[in-house]
Length: 447
Ligand code: FES
Ligand SMILES: [Fe+2]
Image 1 (tube, rainbow, N blue to C red):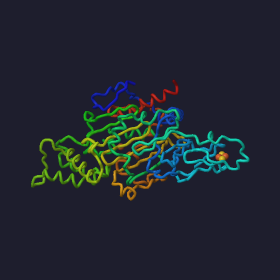
Image 2 (tube, protein in one colour; image 1 turned 180 degrees about the vertical axis):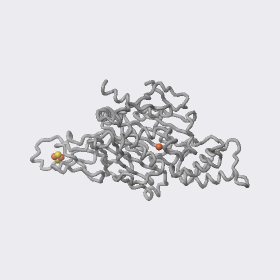
Image 3 (cartoon, rainbow, N blue to C red; image 1 turned 135 degrees about the vertical axis):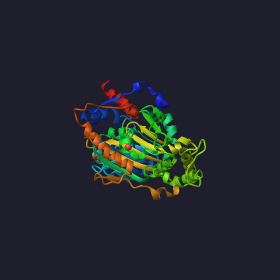
Image 4 (cartoon, rainbow, N blue to C red; image 1 turned 180 degrees about the horizontal axis):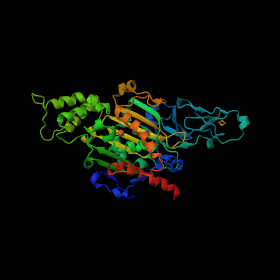
């Protein structure tokens, strides 16, 4: 692959460097899933939670992937560490709950006890144990780091540091949003879906399906390819279509203002920005209530101004964010399985994990809506994590519900062995890039 880096407009992209023809077996084949497991999941940094899930020393949670299990724990020194969830004596699993709080970990089999730093502290009945080097029998540690409030873990002890995996540009751009200060609000849901994990990633990597699946968003999202911008940062990427429609006979100023009013269904923070936005718009209405803007003022600039003023008033420091970031919804992808739409003050993350049962036609998605709230009210509004076990029982917001219904339909189609491959179109270049990166990982095995 020719390396393309930085943010560029659609017109400047070298499309020939990407894979546009994706075999359907990539979504259905157990062999390919095994290969992914070996070349991706056991190798790369992956998000396993939020740092504020484990606020106190002794707080721990499990991360499981296929049949692999890790304990992430905050130590007495405040540092987050990850350990293989298995006792160093004869391998019994150490933690069986999903999360908890402990002063130390004691294996239930023969009562070996480990500290929060993984060190073997004590063995039961030393008289029966004989000579054993405690220093050599601590829990097996795996790298864990935090960035932007997310905990990352990799099973690969020899991996490069997280900062190198993400890259400076990704870290700088994301840090400006102050994601580490955002709180899950309204939705923090995990649910098994009847589709491969990459169907989820693909579905959130293109805007082409807005015409078929989310027509209500057409009045606020500019789909014109010429206006989109794409960031290529190593294995990761960003795409953005400005929140603005061209002024046309079909979509005049009133329709655009109406489009912004409808946004809170998808972007809840807009609700608190709306009063100031309406004020700003009303200043440009004539006595008959018709809107006319002078040169340089648009629905977009007023939304940006209202957002900056409202968020600043709330206490969020938005000084590192550009005007574009005030209005536009940037779609970020961090390889392998993290997608996030983010605007100033809010974000929605979608992660897709292979299904623990090993069926490539299933996955588990974890969807969380984040908002920046003043510190004093963060606990009060924090969403409880929910595990949905009954399909179609959770009330996702409209656009997400539309995607939720669409994805299993695509998987059903992909399972037809007569299909062979998918054909990507130019607008789907983030998908093409994702699969081109995947190609590179999968090839590492056979090389
Ligand atoms: S297996 Fe854990 S103490 Fe024996
Ligand atoms: Fe969608």
